[in-house]
Image (cartoon, rainbow, N blue to C red):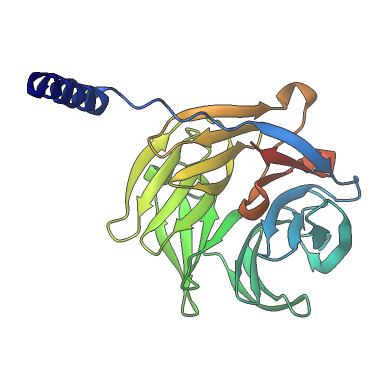
Length: 288
């Protein structure tokens, strides 16, 4: 009996050691199932942002992406795809990226950052970019209220901290930054359009580390959780980027000439919402 127990124990130990040495199976990438789309009364929707409750803000360019024509506006859309207020805030030029902190909605508008009071939809303050030819694009706000803004054409990232507006970083390493997402207060995820890469920017050392590439015109960056991200390529593709850098293409609408601009992920509903830009609508997918 004693010998039998010793043999059994040895076998169990060997099995335990084997399980420790075998590689864990790779996590199965998610898939997207279309659940709704809005009507086409939106006008060149460039970005979408969840308010944390029941509303999606949508930035409509309504014209050329760099025109100072006053025709841009922000819409409100419900989580089931109903347009609740088409022109909630009007009089903008070509609004693009948005970020939210408490009751302040920060929106890029070609050469300026605009702060809108969400209680009444009124613009309260603006900050102008430095120099000529600015093309402010995406916005992200960290948990302490610090705002970061990308200048896609001039290799710059701006920072608005405690009402101080400044160029936080600039130069070639940024490779034409577009999408931004703040992770805590010490890291910024940056999507660039020059190499189609997703990078992590250390905000203390200002060093960039590439996580994945090959995504062409990277636009929106949103977290799935556990270090994973969804990234859009404006040309019409959606990607899942795992924490280890594994890239999986989830959707390609380029054959149908449907863009995928600055996306949003509503985690509580596992809903990935895509602005289609020239198709004038939002399309929402369930992440399964």
